[in-house]
Length: 634
Image (cartoon, rainbow, N blue to C red; front, side, top):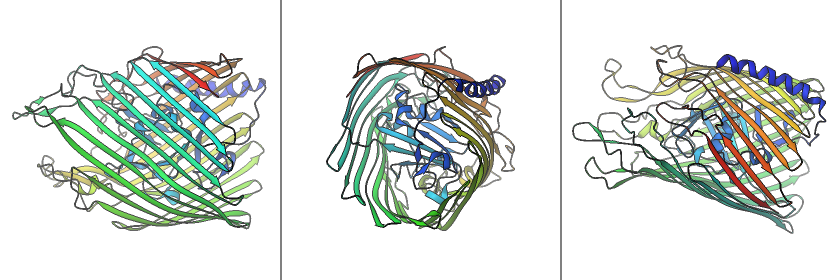
């Protein structure tokens, strides 16, 4: 499996170079924001960034946001059973909590678990996605040890647009969404609503698992998005954004009876959750060389989990966890000399509540940030510095510096170095005693990282290719450990006992012609435990050394077809590396037919060869499945 993966990508890379014989499509350069907090042409960006446009997302009907992300360079994942199920995303091999997720600039996620529920974000409401790999605390503060994923919701345009789409698929999957966008004078708006539901699959595949129960574990999601902006004049604009989703997820579980037997597997274990983010913003040109942006907003992550009251009482026992993150930011971009200086202030308040009472349930982080971005002929330079004053952990300063050299018209080489950190979550710090002495640890320190990377890139017309090498060392990793090291069978609590070394190489290439397109990526990842204990030198769980994606597409008249192949190598499901998950390859096929000016028929066949594979121990993934949708677009 691994050798086949390694050999496929170089062939694809050469094919994309040869394919330039087909007439290339020249497009305007794409612009990204996440890599420096200011708009940049993608070819000038120093960070390792992937831009997923709305056009790209149109090819992924019937897929989830996690499905789309898992096909990108540097991203691996594990899922507890497919769409809507608990999912861990590993960005360059870091832990899920080491990845910061933003929605239109607002922090999104749970302050109790420290993770973002990407599986509940609806793809239909997304305009584009930017993925920044590498430590980015100097830009965004805590959590960005592995990088940042920023989701941008849809916006209104000058030209009125509307669409309605309905779809049906395997496992009794039903989807519907509607979008409208327009402008009235100097006001632009976009509104979207969507609903999806599926009966799902039996998520636990191993009958030996104590939670196994042979039923279907369904999922449903209802969402809405709204964007409004108004230009007061050429220099001043105000606006607001909203994304909200409500979901219901069913899964397998069990409770213990008085004899410590696992029972009550037939109960309908489920989670009902609400997630979203909203903000208001204003942009003002205070002087010819000075633009300021003020943004205020909040995000929410609410979950209600249902389980039996006891082994003999199967009525509902509800447990609730709530996170509210309120954020205010003021950013100033000033043209100074040959570049742009960025100065900003931010304040973030995190509050948690629910059935579980935490001795401390809120904290505030006040931040000061600065940066300088300059383009000097063949050179691009970037430096950022940020100080975060956390009410629990005091001051923490992060920095980053990078440079690139355009040594030939189509060739660029450069490098980056940056630090990252993550403040412990409320569960890490204060989770109450479970009755056996296992509880949170208020004495934890933040996790820290140092990331270094170098790259070489080729960009000319419709052909892009690049190779990035990185090395990221993470210290003070938080993991559960015995309170008394001499008694491993006693009480446990989170402790700063871990260290990890993450090294890797990421190769990617894409080419877009008028008829044919081809591309893909290959990642080599060495994600190791270097804590010095019994697992020293072992591979981190669920991280494959080899992974990659290749695709090829053809556009002919009213037809568009694309075939995709996702490949993942051997992984381990335990820290000692004694239990492995085999590598796998999954092929998908997508096609669309624009049979009239306003109507389009779309079909996607996932897992063409009905591959039986797992991304998490004991949990199944969907077999061969199909999704068909009909879309009207004005």
